[in-house]
View (cartoon, rainbow, N blue to C red):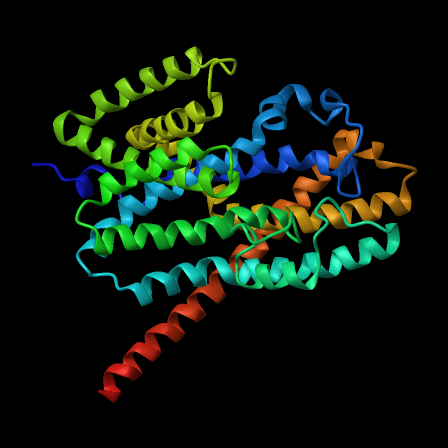
Amino acid sequence: MNTQRLRLPERLYALDALRGVAALAVVFWHWQHFFFQGAVPGPLQVEQQPFYNQFALFYRYGGDAVALFFSLSGFIFFWLFSRAVASRELGGGQFFWERFSRLYPLHLATFGLVAVFQWVYSRYTGNSFVYPFNDAYHALLNLFLAPAWGFEKGWSFNGPAWSISVEVLLYAAFFLLFRYSRYPLVLSAVLIAIAGYVFPDQYKITLGVLSFFCGGLAYRALTWLLEKLPIRVVGAALVMGCGAAWWAYDPAVAHPLLLKFALLFPLTIMAVAACHQVLEPVARRLAWLGDISYASYLLHFPLQICAALLADKFFPGRSVFYQPWTLLLFFAVLMTASLVCHRWFERPMQRWLRTQWRERQVGAEMAR
């Protein structure tokens, strides 16, 4: 019998590429930040934004890409870690240290950057840039990766990091379900139902729970299909079903966001994963976008503060951000900074922290 390990390779380049594109979609969505007046949205000519005709989908719906991030995380975690956690091959200490080494160094670095840049911006303009709650209390929440756990008074510091904060809670819930529950899939469905019922109240956490566990169950559904049918049949059926679902999707229906986040995004991930063999030649060339997606996601807001300061100093107003050259320059700087950050900061810090963990474990074993 073909197993899921034989069906899916150890790396799905198509999902890496999808994650990278989603990160860039968020940057387009946040282009509106340049037209804020302090923390209040200012007058924005939406269709005058650079290359709007080409990237209208990202400008209009790029914020939804965060839900896609959550679904991708759920799919990947159920795929790579669920069996190891359930069988106790992967312990809690190692699991959380690996997550910590992946997320925290860059989060801390960009939090520090934004704290400095916001201080400069507020001294220069009298207001914070977009996210206003940059005080000691919210600094403490950010230090503990908790700016989106319900303790916050509002948006603070590197605002996009709210999704990273929610990811931490999702990782903990995932580990507890698969380590201590006999029926993790049933409980995942229960969490989805609760989050869907509460949504959009407590938007940050309910969006994360809904999207993450829908992505996880999408992985289980895909592997079940692959055990029953040839991969080409599954891929073709999912592509047609996904295309039909998006074509039929009507934002005017009841609960349109729930349909998108709980059904359409997971279905899209299933279709992309099932077609990985067809997509791989192109996806391999775009997978680097996924590699730097975490850096581009966390770096784009501090870079926006710098760009806004420079524009205020050298140009008569923010209308310069309607010019195509500003978008091209911004993305060139962002992509370069993200590549450098990924290669020379993220990966070395991750390796160093994980080496420290292994050495401590070896030392503890020898001490016994």
